[in-house]
Length: 246
Image 1 (cartoon, rainbow, N blue to C red):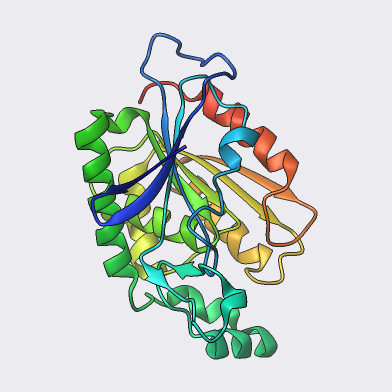
Image 2 (tube, rainbow, N blue to C red):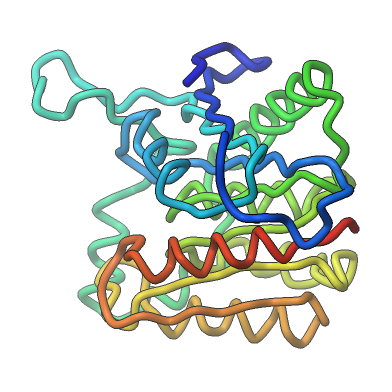
């Protein structure tokens, strides 16, 4: 594993030395950028590189969110990080009152800055690897998948696919009209039916919006909560293996 600065973000990079055979063996290997969730350390998803049976030569890149949540007076938090700050109190009230659906209209404060940082990281990655957008997959877990979705829907960059692991719909008035510009984009989305943090019906609504806008959306629901179970890792590997050039 290499650890380096890619533009404004620190990132960890792992290259698969073995794995499946790609559907398009004569094309360049995939680069898969996966971003961690709120409150997690920068290396939180790195183990996925070994757990996903992606094609040999696939490069996994794990950026570290720019905001540190750690408090020296609370060392148990470790290196907790975030893409933008969350108003936990407001969020908890919405869960108690059953009004979480209202939050899908929000454009979180700090999302624009996070998007700029991710785009800067992608520019640096392009300069270093000469990877083309036709072989670049972006995604993440929870908050990381939300910023990935925001980047895909608000920038003109080319992508080979989008991965949303236990993510949700945000900034609906901006995201939903932008879906038409990504017609045909492959999307892999997974969500637990008992997710206590990001309710399953909202994730399902996001999938339906993808389908209506004619994105090539794969939706994997699983019995469980807010996480990435083995069957998601397995199916994500199959999905990556089947991605052809775009």
